[in-house]
View 1 (spheres, helix red, strand yellow):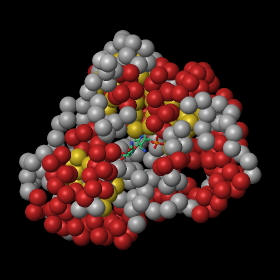
View 2 (cartoon, rainbow, N blue to C red; view 1 turned 120 degrees about the vertical axis):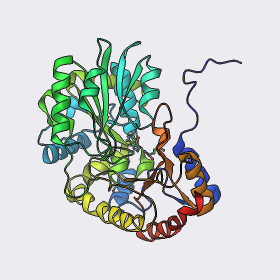
View 3 (cartoon, protein in one colour; view 1 turned 45 degrees about the vertical axis):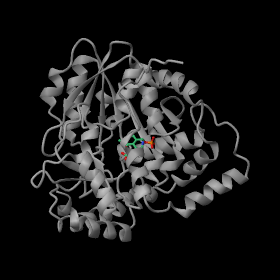
Length: 384
Ligand code: PMP
Ligand code: GLN
């Protein structure tokens, strides 16, 4: 059989590749972004309770009411607005599904979608599978902030949407209120939709706060806010997330969601609804992760690598460009095989693979594991 690929440029993701290499090499995996510690036993017990009590059949297509309500209350508390749980909140199988369903709901063949690079790897395939055309805009060096004039210059009559991500993977850049206002004034003139990837909404450092695009009136009416309980509560394997969007957008979003997965794991939804009643569970996350980031930075400062502290997410970038021009893919592989610490080469987050000799490390790990990894990274000069 011969098959014409719809995604001819796509291979296995770097996250799978590096995790596999880490396993083969028995290396510490600071590559793929997942927490290296257990989740809260309270949450695990709630899942056990709801499975035992028989909450094991299909959930309603848009999610169980209890969880949609709990999320609306959390949004009120953290972002100052209350989305209507029944018409504006949808529970899905991970932020990846939320993003895919949002793109599918709005992108028609030939539509352009602005993508800020470096970008998370799921956006472009979701755009192109829907016949859309990604239009890439580079983030600014050295902090990965947005050049709003440049973004404005890329908008044409064909531009349907822009996809944005704060706190940002891989750079950790966190949007300021100025960023939010700039986007609002840009879209109010042009009628674009916004897909806002906010999966690291609760992981911010040095007193920063997350400004959801849903909290801005101009943006709210055109934005799909995509989030992930997996990321927030250290359970990435559960693949459960959400999309908050105004009713008109949510209606189209749900038409896609109901044929992608129809509904999402029932006992997890009831467990998360009850767990969310205690706001401390997410309000304590910045302090929890700040300790890990600080420990990681302290160790990194003793290596020859250079870095700027991550502002949010559980990733830290570091460069070796002042020491070597070897490719980041090669250095990431050598670091995994020789130093036994896996990381991600940042060139893979660019459509044209541009290489600035930058590596991404995930510090969402136990302290002992981070300390051992840092000890091994001390020998990084041996790779250059
Ligand atoms: N967006 C970004 C920026 C991510 O890093 C990830 C990875 N977790 C996702 C979306 C996907 O989230 P989920 O695992 O909930 O599908
Ligand atoms: N979001 C995670 C990362 O950036 C990976 C998730 C995945 O493997 N698809 O590392």
